Image (cartoon, rainbow, N blue to C red):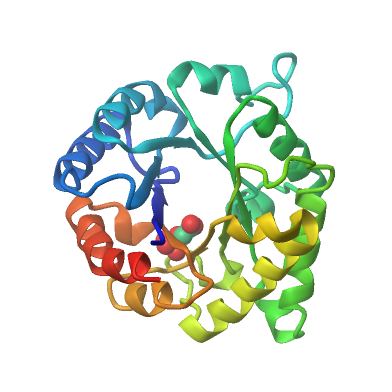
Length: 258
Ligand code: PGA
């Protein structure tokens, strides 16, 4: 029986108080869902991590961080070290989100160093990849995804690594984004699966691949119904605990029936 992988990154939106209220409500609402059926994770702001960690542990929610420096310590003003994240109970580290790549200038080489640091410290990297609108128009989406995977995961020799992939087309993310159709997303997920198999052999096919980019109550079910879509990585539509819980309940039976 398959498992549902589902989570949210709350970006630079929720304060500490808001994160705590959100997590407490989400944990309570989803308490009856056995965690063997679902990997539920929340990636709050850095300042919320410590208090969020306590609530997450009590409710079977995995705690994630939105980014991480590749170095353990040193002169890196404004960065956050894997050791600091460890202290807060973080288990998942989101790396290479589109907003990091396109607004903050992160490239595949930086993402690759972060992946290695995350694995070295026992975190599960959630590697985000996706093509821009122009690359989609040029018909090179699959090539872009292959490059992002091959460079982002370069030198990773654990087989398979504890890893989650989030396919998030840049043009689909955020208020101005337009969600990918389930068919389009499925084609890209299939390319990602193939590439992971090339990189890690047969076991690479077991690495969960999540879709993200304007997931909402209207499109969640058609996305999860696709064979290569193992989970959903949701922004705005998950920031209200009741709405998020409703999406989870809608997609869970379909994910498990795969
Ligand atoms: P969105 O965000 O669901 O609000 O488009 C997705 C993401 O950035 O992961």
